[in-house]
Image 1 (cartoon, rainbow, N blue to C red):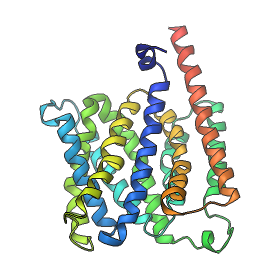
Image 2: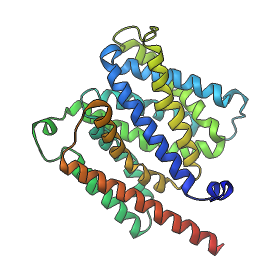
Image 3: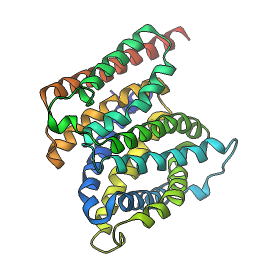
Image 4: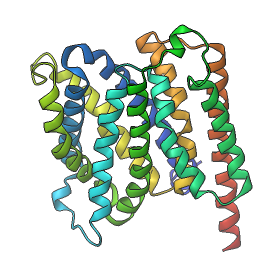
Length: 296
């Protein structure tokens, strides 16, 4: 496949989403290891502040002329910050894979409300089956049953922010282009960095902490959000949301590799269901795109 053909196909935005998910979950695992030193709010402040700085250097948003309605751009930044803040609060006490599965209720809701074909609901049903096995709805053993409710509620709140992030991100990205993520991250940093700094356990700007903070900012903010913004402008919202159903599986694998959070057999079944739903959504979206092109 040539570069021009790749740019015009569904494959490119799908690859961008996969790379973004791998990056963001690796960054989340690194961030969780930093919680004992500066706490979840401190890590949030580092991630958003340094991430916004990196994105502003790359995209130079001050050169961009902001036209049209600015409200989606502002709401995109606020939901981005809220999603990060609540997610880090959740993984203090909830395993990474479970937290992301709870958070996924947000984009899954976007997929449900955006669907118009019966086939779309089949993939959503398959993803929900995986969610049922992955979430601690039925006690499987003592460790899985005792999920902290406060952490779970924070994850669900992050999911609500994630849903709004998808909706406002598509609107803002269509109007303002790739630099949208830099402005959105700047809005998130202005609102949530002071909050995170206030609740940080110790000085999060110490020389020993800053290199880790930069790594988290790149892995969890600068790289994935730039890639997601490019994908959002190339895929329908429902396709983007269903593809993101791979996120709990990738998070669970990151938890195994970096945090020692092992999975049960039923949870591996859940991963298979979620990945199968994502791949099916990708294939049917590709066929739909080809059919639409042939009809025009």
